Length: 264
Ligand SMILES: [Zn+2]
Ligand SMILES: [Zn+2]
Image 1 (cartoon, rainbow, N blue to C red):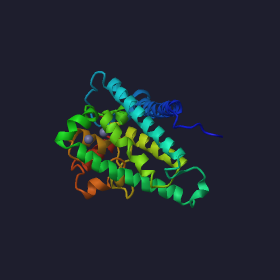
Image 2: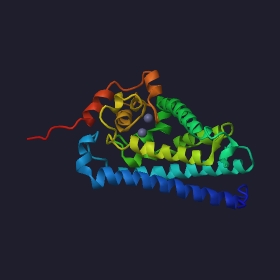
Image 3: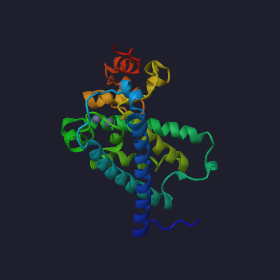
Image 4: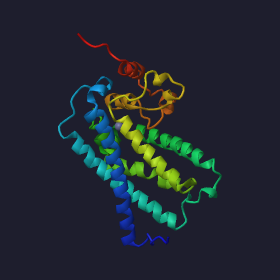
């Protein structure tokens, strides 16, 4: 199939709109599914794992969906630019899985997650600088108690800073198109899980040899509460290494994953 020339403004716009539709649909679907399962359909079951008991601010979800829609548009623009430069042969995106060894498929996914983690951890610390915070990152922290809808609730400036990472990386880093799509889907699911405000990981997961490296709802809820800890995106290693992991994390995780005896 011959692809249209995306350097023509009309086709560039079409590409942007199609990617926007995919990104926003993926966000609404995944956040909606988690909201349904954990808040609407089985609330009694998950209630004791709810991290904050305070009610959500009026219209919070509406505001979060609004900012997330703006972010989706920024991500779509960055996706369209990536397609455009891909067509010009500038990026390292490939579509034939045999262009590189097969083991590169999983390895490239792991490496891109680690690089994204590193980029976001340091960007995130910088965004908490008092001079930067108000302008760039405050919108995200307006959600004191997060929800699945908080996942992409960012100020456009933060959205841009997040959106430049992959296109720049893809200039030098070979990635199969499907690995790229997998990475973006993992990013969405991870952000929804981390903002769920309900701990979904099993008991003792925070001490498990693999589990302790994964960020979840308890971990990230402490970032929204304490601001100066837990800056990570998917993994805890930067926070552990730079000693920015919240001292309250283990205790809160244990509390939320321990079944309380029935009252009365
Ligand atoms: Zn923050
Ligand atoms: Zn957050």
